[in-house]
Length: 239
Image (cartoon, rainbow, N blue to C red; front, top):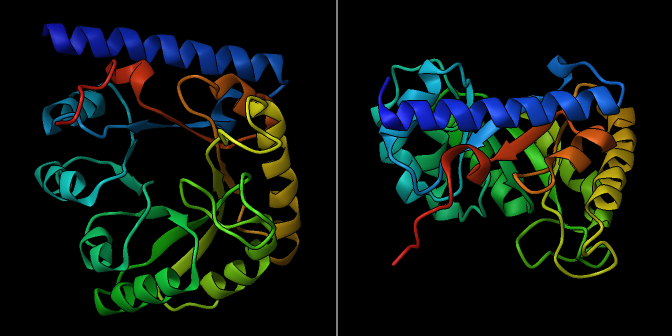
């Protein structure tokens, strides 16, 4: 086993143990929580190692990094998630490899995703990114729609050809009433998910929690956690 594979295997085992422990503490089964490894800034060789170690879900947040990496790893049994703020001029590229877009936060993006999914005969899973630091109908500092915009955007996605409404995503906010209160933020997301599922029962995915707060996300009821640093190490500085 190479040094890098050994390192990733050890890190992955620690994260798996954290998730399992959090599930036990919350009275949940381990299989209720899916680990998504965020591989941004890391090479395709790391993605290949992770696949060998059993990882099945990976995420990227920059199309210029993700597109070539996904192409290089197209032979692997992976589900690719796009988790970054997505500009409409990148939609054509992203739809080429992403199975799910977790950062849907405006009508114009829904229209662009739908058009491209239909053109390529793909079906793209969509999560509405919720900004808990935004005003009711505003937008968050790191993207996302305010809580008042979820219902309308959900209806748009659900009715858009080529798209599938899978649920909600959030990033623990740095400002506002939930700043420093990750579990409260994730519990709020779960409440919003309950409301969404009344109209769209299949939209039961809740993506929340990262390396520093995955335990709080699991305790709140998240179905997916997005972990990068704890698996891959501290990211190299971008120039």
